[in-house]
Image (cartoon, rainbow, N blue to C red; front, side, top):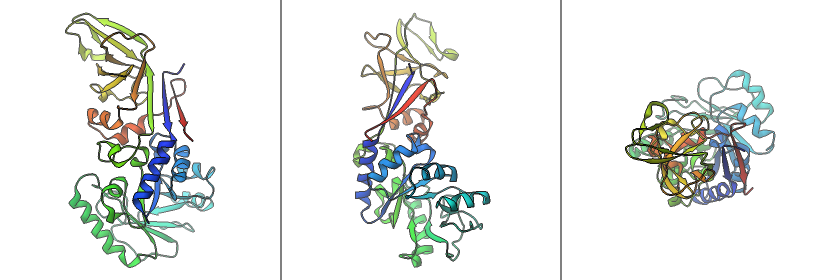
Length: 340
């Protein structure tokens, strides 16, 4: 028996793609499926997103693109990350499109020139005159989910550099947050990742955008213990009972993607909220129990009423990071896609 089970609702992904495609109108939806589809399964998500209206897929590496190309021979696949000269032939043979971040121009490959307008990471400081292999011009927003003034500054710089090429090359800048909140940034295409998975890029509630979470993560209570006053659970004795306290031990830990800094968040035990206490270990976590709970009782780690956004707030991080960290581990957990 697996210790935990991840279910990916491809119907939700398909729905989210339709919502985004409708929102974008004349702009294309490009589905970002890097990092194994943000931990949701790149190929399954890619197919569902394409069914929902996406017209292209975006990945981080040539290797990710090649893995998709085997199963999706006719789909536009854009590699967003930097590449090396030895990647060029692989990309050319697989009809992948590459992103140019510096002076090196890949040989014989369709490319997108990336202008760094303020992200301060990958990208060209100035836009060169596009050559014959160029099919797109792009940038990446640093603060689409927050600092509106800086986003406007980035977008204005991109517009100044690329407006003369409107209608000649595909221009794309918007990520999920910009696509949802800043219509003027949608241009010819928007590269949507986190929203595709039904996670709010603003860290609130994706339902307000009409999006549905695709990931559900479940386990069970493997042991029930009663702590006397002064007794503790877990490494470091971070939780010490002040009174007689019942806890449930769940066989999931940071090896499965339930991070140590999620202590204090809540999960659902038989549908009832239960607080995670003590240090999360590699293979287990403990929850406070209220009422009768038996060994084998179901535990929802992520699911209806229990979002990755809420866990992210408890951990002081973003839902993107949590989603990417939930991975099936042989002998420990499984991931199953439904609604395909």
